[in-house]
Length: 63
Image (cartoon, rainbow, N blue to C red; front, side, top):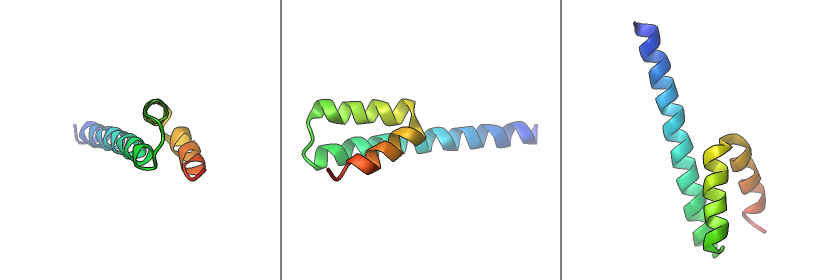
């Protein structure tokens, strides 16, 4: 029972982190003056491909 709770809490934490970083990337793209289409692409990219999407966005965000 305790192991299942630990697994659930870990998975919930990863989900929260994924959603938080996706929202941050979207807001950052909008704040940097990117188009809304670009910001939505960033949002979905980081939401569905969390690690790869965030790495790619961090590299292209200052261009």
